[in-house]
Length: 404
Image 1: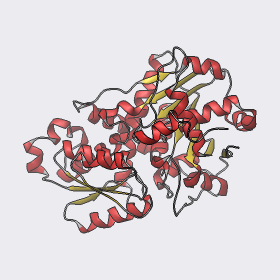
Image 2 (image 1 turned 90 degrees about the vertical axis):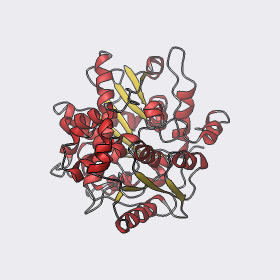
Image 3 (image 1 turned 30 degrees about the vertical axis):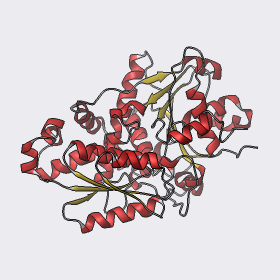
């Protein structure tokens, strides 16, 4: 018998929404212009799953496929690279609009700024993005990974020239380690997508960088003849991605925003726990977080993202491993006419959840609370491809983590 999906409707008191402006259309536009200056930039596909939508009884279902992002198999590079550019802009006294790829790789930048060492903690995708950006821009990177990190992700980071270690502690402890080392290093900078008191500027830049993905998706929806998605499902670790996506769509459609659903790995569901508590204060999950969704195995919320989410999300959902595994198989073996999406564990949880909600009367109450109907247009984000190829095969080929 599969473990039950847990969920809670958002009844938290609203804050003053002071952080929604991070994801303003202006800020996201600056981030996207920066990304467009890279020779490796292209808009990632929006996979329209029309056959699956019809089968499930939805008007539209689309998945933003980030396995194509900059050749790195995940979206994370969007945040780390823009944070680096914004940091360099601040240190050189130039506007971020001048932080083009050509300038950041120029002799002029070497004179204006020199070289910094960017420290970060990662389960794999964020660290690879930071290492790649540092490598491309002539900077240094030091990356710490939590225990249990897989060798393929380690190797991908090391291949970008970063100094990388796997530590015998969880993700949140690796964050503290990276922050302490950055403080002790001359020209050291911590580039992390989680925020805490006194560390908010760089996480806000990272969130703005993630806005490139959300803005592309919104434009692709419009190009397909759909004004906007009625429902946006987005996964969360610390909540930076979720806060970025929700914040962008609220700013883009202020009078009629989509219904937002945030999904977490049940072993690391800090946002869900905060929503259950219902007082608006964040909650922390500590210790080991044994989940296949390594990118979501984070127990301490980003305070900026949390503030946006508590104000605008309808439902928080804690998903067992089988939900992600089901999504991987659904996307990897599409119905006739639908494109195939190779999605990793953290990328596929939305597909696993939406198919379960539409197929199973066990979750009819959640389906009704969200308001999913035959008129619904649902947007999902596949945030990574097969970044752990061994486990991808175990799930998709061998049927690991069955849904029944």
